[in-house]
Length: 113
Length: 113
Image 1 (tube, each protein chain N blue to C red):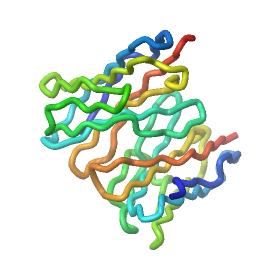
Image 2: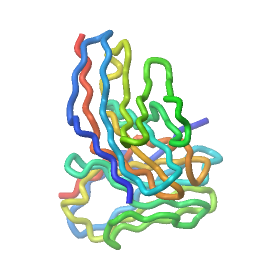
Image 3: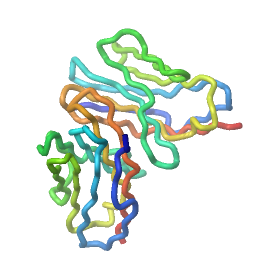
């Protein structure tokens, strides 16, 4: 069974600064994907970034990047140059094989002007 | 392409009633997944359908059921509603069965009185 743990229920960051959201996971699958999803107050969930477990290189999408530590089963999200529009709930998720997508409990990110 | 649509957006029911929620995936997407989101439990997987077949099922009682039609549209049904069924029900579609980005709909907010 897969599990995903987000240990930070809430985080805050000043506009233009950098913040890192933590995520650890556990899976018995040898091949799996990891995701960060963003859910703004409007509730539409959108994919922020995806990491294939077999790739050693950390994924990057503009201001968003991950630090994937496979041995430690850690998958943190770094947001650089934070913007007010980054305020949202962020969910870490994993999917292995043909299994379901498993989400963490989420981290509420507040961006202060 | 139009995004994932869910109807209705809001629903109020009383205990004991049943409810049917609808999800129309992005055109061409054959996989549809359903999730229940509550403040206490977070995002929990309900079931996944691919080409009209239930591919995965979460740990929910038999009161929760679903189906997928030949045009990939999906419905979920909850019978004998309980207060604890109050939640945001999210639908997500993807073009492949595994390892592919899931696109989420806006959700249906169900309130059980």
